[in-house]
Image 1 (tube, rainbow, N blue to C red):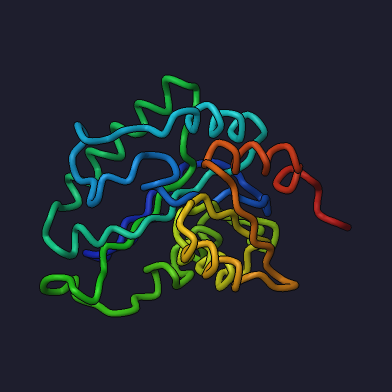
Image 2 (image 1 turned 180 degrees about the horizontal axis):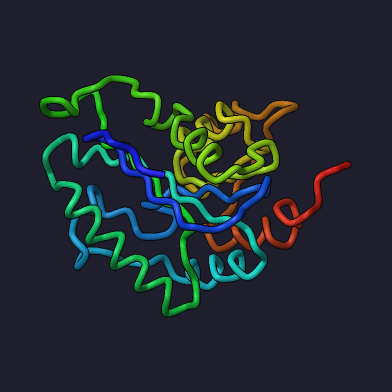
Amino acid sequence: MAVDDVGLWCEIGKADWAHRPALFLDRDGVIVADTDYLGRAEDLRMIEGVAAAIARCNALGIPVVVVTNQSGIARGYYDWNGFHAVQSALAAELAVAGAHLDAVLACAYHAEGLGSLRVDGHPWRKPNPGMIFAAGKGMNLDLSRSWIIGDKAHDLAAGAAGGLAGGTLVSPDDRERQQALLLASGQFVVETAASPVAALAGLVESGRLTRRAHA
C-alpha cells in the first residue's frame, strides 16, 4: 500500500493477515528510546528486551504495526531520508533478535510545521486514528480485536478512536496515566505497565491477540 503524500509514510509487508487482530506500537519510547526528534541512525537506542518480545509476537503470527507521529520532519529537524535511515537501522537491530515489523506508518504533519507540512489535526496524526484505519484497510485486519501500546495518552486515544479493543500505557508520568485512564469504556480497555517489555509480555500471556474470534 503506497501513499502519495508529502507528509505521510506507509510501508506494509506482503503477507496474508486475513482478519487477524494486530498489535499497534508507537515507536519512540516503546521500541526505541525517545531521544527527542530521532532523525539519525547513529542516535538510535533500542529499549532492552523489546526486540525479543516482538520476535515472540512474530512467532505467534501476530501482525506488528508501528504508528508514529513525526513532527520533527514538519519542523525541519530532519527529513524522510533521515526517517528511512532510522527505520533501516531499527530493522537491522530487530533482525538480530529474529524479529521484524509487518508495517510502518508515520505522519509528519503538525500545526507548527513548515510550508505544506503545517497542518493542524491531520487525520493521520495521533490522537486521530487515520494511521490505524489505513493499516486496517491495507492489511485486512480485525481492528475490533487489536491492541495498541504507547507511552503517551494520545497513542491510546488513537486506539480508542480507531475501534481497537484496548491499549497499554507504558509512561511513568502521572498526568499521562490519568489522561489514559479517562479513555476506558465498555468498548476500550485501558491498562498500564511498568515497561514496554512488560506490556508485550502481558498481552502475549493473556492470549488477547491469539484467541479465535467468536463464531
